[in-house]
Image (tube, rainbow, N blue to C red):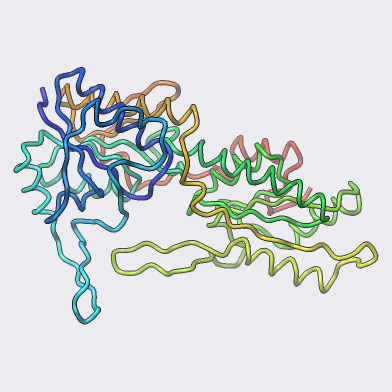
Length: 374
């Protein structure tokens, strides 16, 4: 049975991280296991990192809080560790052996790594170097294929839904087309879930390239046929028009991923151009406004569902460590928490099915998905 384990949070923050930490610590204490919290992800196992003991007293009440008491980073890949030189240049080095030595020096039986696809991929590579790993899936994007849901997702959806509810009232008051851009990278889960919950009129996701003329026709039908002079549109940050490209504010670099941004404003520009060319102006031209929800989706306290699933994930991770079942990732399978080999949990995205039930539901209730209307 494990005696001492390490615990870290990697990648972007999201609601529920502290609930996982809280649960791991309590379940580990029940099994007689000591937990060492590693600050700032894998950075804490590279030179200069900070490690501290975590017990029930140190984590009391944190399950209610957003963020992570351990801190996190999405730039601390020990296999491609970036350091800035005096001349401003950046050098990448492989510090993974330093991590392995730190794990051994601390007397850790293994690491529980809470993270998304990037952090879990790093953890898998460390497992190949002899570091026992248990992964806990974390991402608001819900794009990990080996688990039915990740914690943090539903809290992010709730934030987006509430934003759409608020935008509806101002859209209706001013006869505007309101666009809300939400996160998700290449997956449209947040967009379609929040759009359904809020009753959006159009939902645009990366899995279904949209046509501007189709979105325009949906707006026209609301004005002309339904006598409704406002339209609510939710756009995933990775959404793009058919034949067009995704929108980025920063291209991928060495050791970094591309940063999405601009999908909402790109749609706004296309709609405004269409209004200026072919819109019936007798009833006025719709004004278009775009709101980018951004990091609000990752902040705040977790909702009830995310608190519960986080606690279940954390407890199961500690139980796997106690049983010596390493190199696995905990996963929600149906309504049960189980685990899968870590190697099977990475490298494959969980995306919205273009002809799946969620999309069919959206179409059935009159929501335009951007590819056709009606």
